[in-house]
Image (tube, rainbow, N blue to C red):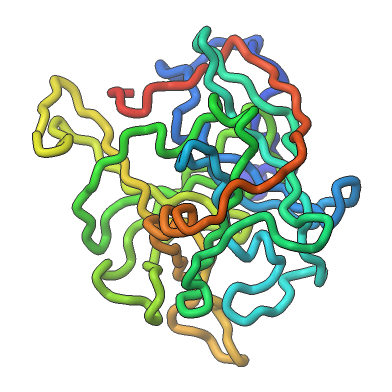
Length: 317
């Protein structure tokens, strides 16, 4: 590939408004519900300070509340396995996220900047980790959002999830934000991946599995989804058949990162293989969380767009 084939600037992954001066190319002109449930995660040492980093996260509905789910190391600023600082030796205390909002008129709005503390004034953490973290080192963290804004937020499990048979080599997707060039409507990049090892094998005695995919460190905290398209779909105890292929999706993990390609000066044969932690640990964390947590009102203005609207995740598109 020559130099003329490469972009020499950072793409703006979004739009400045609802209407563009050119016709659309694709038939489905909606934002997928699964995309709408994801958000870039901006991390700050202080609310008014410079941004430390950005990562990926998503929203999850449980226990009558909406939760933000991401990788634990995003909230600590430290390597999940070694405890070493990842960059600036600073623990994030505040975050900014961009939740999509379902509206009665079919339009989708966004909180421009939803500011949220993750550490209280007394230094205590407002987020929750796996109750078995000391044993399992589960790299997942969850924090609940105030109820005043959470009812209409698009969540990953608003889509009906289906249990899919999973074998090595099966296709899945990691939905995250590898670039800092994200913009409205904050749709994630869907990175294609494959299951890299038999799921029954315990990796390092931890609830994690391996992925073969192209990703970056800013994808940490992204949901991992198994996806299949078929004329038949198992729904409960029944198998239903459709005149056109329909998608089935299953949330299977939270993306953690990649295995270091070089360790102690030697190349690791597993280098660049990615890993994710089991999705079922999210429910374990939330079920064990001690609620409610006193939190201040979160600022943010909801803005709407004529397009895109929230799409049907289970349709044929």
